Length: 276
Picture: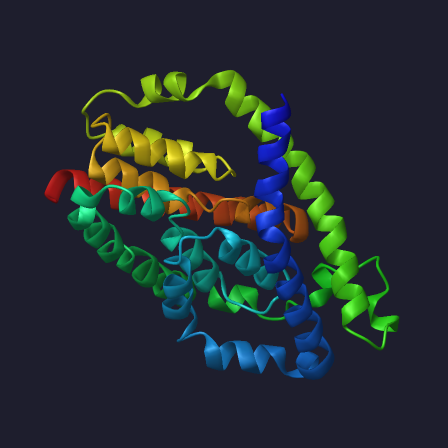
């Protein structure tokens, strides 16, 4: 139990600088560009998914946390958010790097990041107009941030509040993962069928860094296919999904994001399974 608690603390601490940085950026943007955010968002949407996919390639789930905060505050588009989620591989690349014989797998995994770019732009083409008009009011509805002259105090307030919430949920998830066990999760995914990516994508939705570790180890051991590990890593946004559901007040919108993420990941996995 002590190890589970320690892992939860360490996992949460990894997100702390990203949380604070994201809230600082959001507070600064709201104070200096609040009245012009719709115009800025419209002009920047064409570069968002590409930039999001590039950031998501970095082996660190902190960027999905940043993206969730920025989306909740109305600073990035839905397509950009999904491009970050879809490109996030978390611990997978690190685990592959540890095996010198897996260089080709790393290259193939990086190539699949184009999924995030394509999906991000398509989503923005379809859903962009629905996102206009959103701002920091989605986050600061009851904290009186507008009364502060400095951006530091509100950013710190939001960071501490969200960190405590994230730590509690991470601890609960770690306990569940410890009880369920990686072997049992592995058994769910066994079976070389075209539907394996469907199950792998469900495992990837577990909002914890352990999901990417389990999926990558299953792939390295030959238990699941490359297409399945891609599907699972596409949905594996780490703590990003937890932050989205906490910070974004629109629950229906959050479910839409979750649904889009899962469907895109499954389609990508099945296509790779059939044709790769």
